[in-house]
Image 1 (cartoon, rainbow over the protein chains, first blue to last red):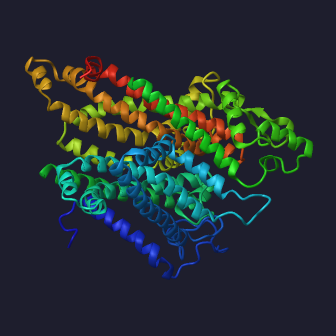
Image 2: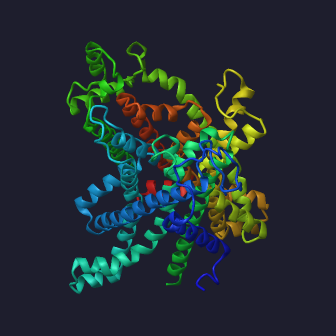
Image 3: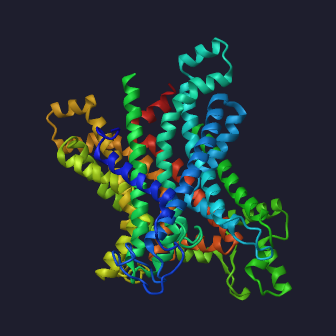
Length: 284
Length: 320
C-alpha cells in the first residue's frame, strides 16, 4: 500500500478527502431524498433518526442529502478555481520572473494591488457587483456560482503567481540556466524544461493550502449573504441553517464540521508536501 | 531613499485600488440613484445623482471623491427614505470604535498567549509535551474563525448562558458588560492567530537557540529565563511582527464575519450592508480606508524592523 509508511495525519486526510470525492461524484446514486425537497412528516428531527441519518432541518430537508450535494458544489468551486488559478498564476508569475522589464512591472502591479486588500472584502465586492441583479434588466445576471468561481480565481492568481514569480527569479539566476542559455536553447525550452519543473513542487504545495482557503472563503461569503443558491453548498447550507442554531443545532454544525475537516486535510497535504520539498532541497 | 520609494509605491497601489473600485461600480449597468430609491420622485433622484456624482463622467467623479475624501468628507449613506440620509463619517463614528477595539483586543490577547507558549515549546522542542501541543496547534490553525465563532456562540452563550450571543455594550456604558460582550468574538478571532503565531515563534526560537551568542550567554552562567526572554525573544520578535502585519488583512476579513455572527454592528457589517445596498460613496470610502490601514501597517512594520533589529539599522547607516 502507498499509505503504509505514512503518518497518521496523512492517512486521515486521505480518507476524508477520498470520502468527499466519492460523495461529490457518486453521491447522487444513493437512495436519498433530493437535496432541496422537504419531508413534511419529519421537520427538524435530530441526527440518527429513522430515514434521516443526519436528521432534517425545520423544513424537513434531509441533511445527509444536502451535505452530499454541498460537497459537489464546494469542492467543485475549490478544484476549478485552484486549477485555473494555479495555471494562470504560474503562467503570469513565470513570465514576470523570467522576462522582468515592463511585463514584470505590469504583472507585479496586478499582484500587489490585489494582495494589498483583504481577500474576503474584495471577493464580497466582486460578487456583489457582478452578481447583483440589475432591477431594470432582470435576467442579465451571470449565475452566482460562475461569478463566485471567477472572483475566487481572480484573487487566487496573485496568491499563487507571487510564489511562482519569486521562485522563477531565484531559479533563473542559477548556473544551469546560464548554461542552457549559452547553449542557444530556445526560451520556451529553457522555461518548460528548466524553470517550470523546479517551480512546480512549491506551487502545488501552496495550491493545497489555497484549496482549503477557498473552502473557508466560500463559507465566509455565504455567511455574509454573497454565497450561492441557499442550501446548495456547504457554506450556503451553513448560512441558511445558522438562523435556527437554537432549534436544530446539528444542521449548523454538520456543514461547519465538514468545512473544518476539509480545510484540515488540505492544509495537511500542503504542509506535508512543503516539508518533503524542504528535505529534498537540503539533501542537494 | 528606501522609505521614499516605499511610500511612492504605496500611493500608487492605493490609487489603483480606489480607481479600480470606481471603474467597477461605474461600469455596472443601471442607474444607482434608481436602485437606491426605487420610488423616489424625479427631483429627488436628480438630487441623489448630484450627491453621488453619477451625473459626472468617471474621472470627474473619481477626482471629486478623492478631493472630498482627502478633506475628510466621506460621502453619504442613503437610508430607505431620502430625508434620512446620513454622512458616512457619522456612521463610522459609531461603528469604527467597536471594530478597532475588537482588533486591538484580539492582537493583544493573541500575543500574550502565544509569546510564552511559543518560547516554552521552542525551549522544550522534541519533548512529548511539545509534540502534542504543536500537533494540536496545527490542527487548530486550520479551523476557520466562523466555525469557532459558531461553536462558542452555541455552547458558551446559548447552552451555558454565560454571555449574550449577540449585541455589543460600549466601554463607556458598562465596563463589565463591555468585556462580556466582546469576549467570544475576540476569542474566536484569536484562536487561529494564536496557533499561527505560536508555531512560528517556536521554530524561530529553535533556530535562535542554536546561535553562538546563546551558547556564550549560557556559559557566562546566565539563567535560562534571562537568556530566553532577553537574548532569544528579541530577534524572534521580528518574525512575530511581520506575521502580525500580514495577518491584519485576514483579521479585517475575519472581523467582518465575526461581527455578523455576533451582531456587533461594527465597520465590517457597515461595509457589508453598503456593498449589498450599492451605496457607492460609502463603499468607495470604506474600501479606501481599509486599504490605507492595511498598506500602512505593512510599511510601518518595515520601518519598525530597523528599531528592533540593530543589524538592519547598521546596514542602512554604513551603506554596505
